[in-house]
Amino acid sequence: MADVQRQLDAELTVAHAISLAWFEAMSAIRDSGGTIRIGELRQALDEVTSSLSRRLDRMEEHGLVHRAVPTRDAGNDKRAITVTLTASGRALWREANITYRRVVQQRFASRLTDTDVAALHRVLGKALR
Image 1: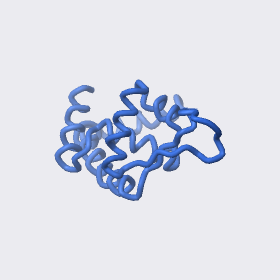
Image 2 (image 1 turned 45 degrees about the vertical axis):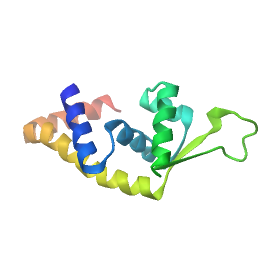
Image 3 (image 1 turned 90 degrees about the vertical axis):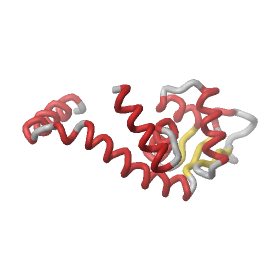
């Protein structure tokens, strides 16, 4: 699995100038509807708060995300801060997702037979019910 992560990181870096960690953060934000609270993002990524904060700082500097405190939340409650993908972030995610899916296809799907895929669908269908 580490080999696949290294390959994904390298491909994303070369093609889109982002790391796998940035792509995963953008994916989690996108999967949540485009906006997510910091605490939920930290939990989704299983990330240490300080590390995530530094990553979001850099992503914000590049115009990919925007952090804001919702006006309805009072005080300086950092848990209330939300992260939103910007238009540039959404566009970059769409482009990077093509690269991500291509690498996954090359590493996994291309090695599976139709029988393997059917078995996976059957097993995952049972497990996810």
